[in-house]
Length: 69
Image 1 (tube, rainbow, N blue to C red):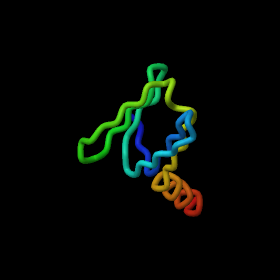
Image 2: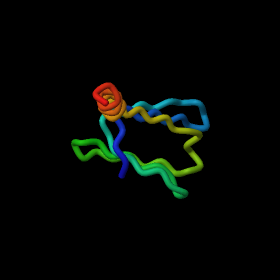
Image 3: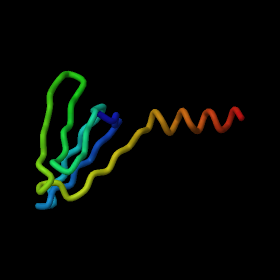
Image 4: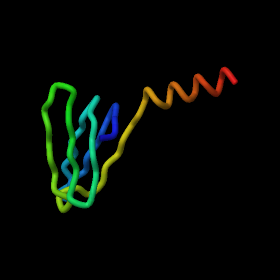
């Protein structure tokens, strides 16, 4: 599962769900999202229009490494 500081899921009916500090898997069968406290959501692929992921902690780390170089 991949980490996400913020995961935004846009459904085909234009509803939007936001998750913070989760891990997720996106595949042909759909999207599976797991929170740190163990809660889990599963969305079949025909319900998900698109996803957007933000990895703030990774971006910050890379920026700090570039400045040090």
